[in-house]
Length: 602
Image (cartoon, rainbow, N blue to C red; front, top):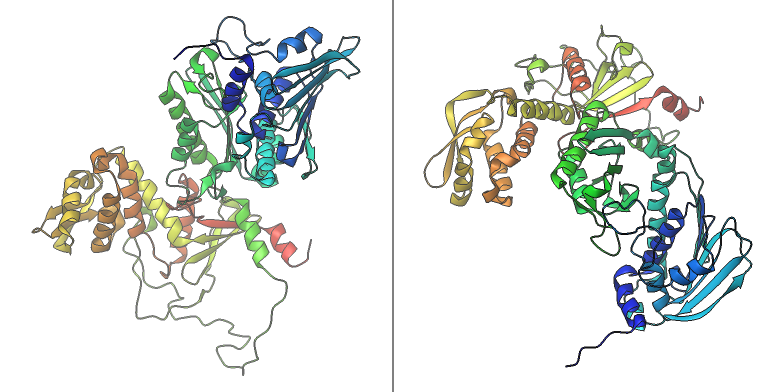
């Protein structure tokens, strides 16, 4: 078989298969060129999802006739010279325009800001049609028509016009976040005009344009440095989450990337704070010496490779966790908004009942003789021990407000005023009220106490007078015994009791009375799902979360006033107390202004 040189057109079409996968890829390359040219205004117009028409106009530096002629040739660029170790521009490969010109009808008109006149060049299917003077405003207009007309097979792999238009919108959003000082306008016959005015140095304002106004109220600022890498941006509080990862944006030296390492680090930073199937909202920007990152991994330039990936991952995880510990315990504003939407003005009154002693105006609520708080718990909340419930006293729906010595203004979560349905604590704050899920909140407190103890010493345990025997399948017993030493570090001492049973001899002291059988069975199920070769020690926090759930205040437990206030005070000083171990919110805050709005007072 004879070896021969491929034609320039065929070479460009092969390159286009990697660089230009869809209309959004072409839009990305053209917008990057405009930004590299110093544009402060970029307008994108599309038709047919970008397949029929894609036009990008900018007010950048512009090009003269000589530049235009070289721009449509492969590997011609003004952005690098002899090395790839110091790339400070978005584009640098010199492949985008010739690749587009080889598979579409491409025309470029441009004029330098100090030029007397403009020029225009046209290419179709890799062939130069003309290069001539043209009346142009300063800047550049690139027009792409009939994308992939020269390679019809590629058209079959494109999605619907609506899907392709959505992909272009996503590209514009990412670019807009990266460059808040640039005004972006996206329009076309298949969409309403989308405009992002420039916000200058106010990055959070630009993020709010893209992610919505709620993001500003639920974002925590990230600012950290480790060695030669700086991380800035904003991350949402854990309870402000979404159903997919589309609202996670990452940038490396201003370049939008979709890097697996960064996305994995974000997911790891929010572990144990967000429910399974939910995703945090985050916008992170990494500044690093260009010599320490390779952006030439793929022609699309969306993947990067760091020289020290563990340094970058550790920086992201550590910075986000530190920010969450500092400010992430607050409840998302979406919780209060959802609560307000659930209210309806007015209600359908129930039929009047005859007056009785229990429903007369003088006694609107039934109060048990013990004031509705049950017996004292085994220990105070300072010890994080589950209270004991009384089964011989009827459970009231509403615990009447006790005398409270604490002043709401003294504490962020206020002073406890009542307990509703034996699960929700209502507290009065200085400017509103807070509703706390007592089980979810205490579960988080127990988990954080266990996690803290994990890094300092073996957790204290309490010996059972009579070991509890748990019958399990033999394979589950084998898995549990494989990690008995690790479980012992958490205060859970187990032994084999025959081929199909486990004897529980000690349980973590901080859990108080615990359903040992239920705990062992759940741990057996969880360990069965893990790769046992990796060891349980790497997953001790997940085990701690499981134990915390079994040792927390249950729904339906009546709490004394001092217990409720103790729970609130511990929440205020515990990292991540705004959500339970499963990522659900532990409390909802309602401002006084919101309450007044419900009653039409404002």
